Amino acid sequence: MPLVPMGPMLKQAQAGRYGVAAFNMIDYNSARSIVEGAAGLDAPIIVQVSVKTVKHWGYEPIATWVRMLAEGVDIPVALHLDHCSDIEVIKRCIDAGWTAVMFDGSALPFAENVAKSREVYELTQRAGIGLEAEIGAIGGVEDDKFVAEDAAILANFDECVAFCREMPKLAVFAPAIGTAHGFYKGEPKIAYELLGRITAVIDIPIALHGGTGLTEQQFHRCIAGGCAKVNISTMHKHRFIEGFVKLRAEKPKLEEPLPFIASQYEAMKADVVDMIRTFGSAGKARAAAQGAAA
Ligand SMILES: [Zn+2]
Image (cartoon, rainbow, N blue to C red; front, side):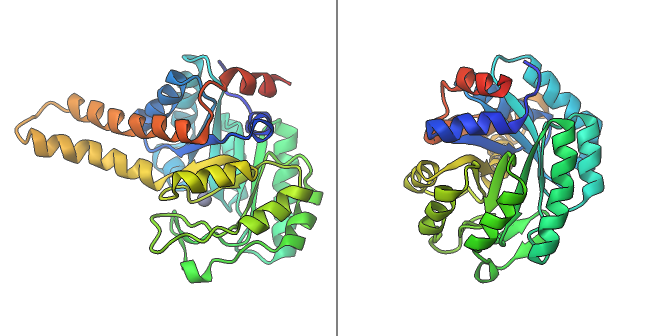
């Protein structure tokens, strides 16, 4: 089916207490493993792209790949731009056919974050696509931005309320709740209490960043607490590399490239399938598509 906006599918997920997986694609093969992995389980899916990856391949190629993959399957697929602080990049993604974008103004002072996020909110409302916006500082590395885990700041509750009041139709809200990008060095300390306070008064689905390395129990607790979008990037990158390296070690004389691509595909897809099962979104494609059409 054609690409769908992200907001309605996440509303459905929030109501049904399951999580929609959002994987960061790397190349066509990776996008294919994400979409086909989800299609095999009849699950809604978000293919998201880092700014770095967009700049590597270009806007049109990525939009074309993901649109073609979505049209070949019978599940709702949203194409999303991950953490972006550059409004010009966001505009180009909207023009190229993205159905959701994230504006990350979390490094800005609160008032400026609100003003800039509102500007992008107007753009996305006009385009009929979804917006994700962030408050607080999620730890770890995202693209070239590094936030030390001890410098990661939990979202301020009052600021969350004020922020979301400005943007009632936000597709998904990303408050920093203690998770981090990359692999965790220690035990992640998730601020469940803050998550509970936020979802008690804000009726917007929540995004869970830094999904790699969380336990099944942590995923379940976050999803039950209102996290409807679950981001996985680091693990997917590792599968991409492992898929190649493992076959190379097994068959060092192999000179044909296609088996390597197939091996990467299988490694990435197995992880996609595993995560979708964990998040409870298998079999939810129809409900999510109805939400998307509403
Ligand atoms: Zn993130």
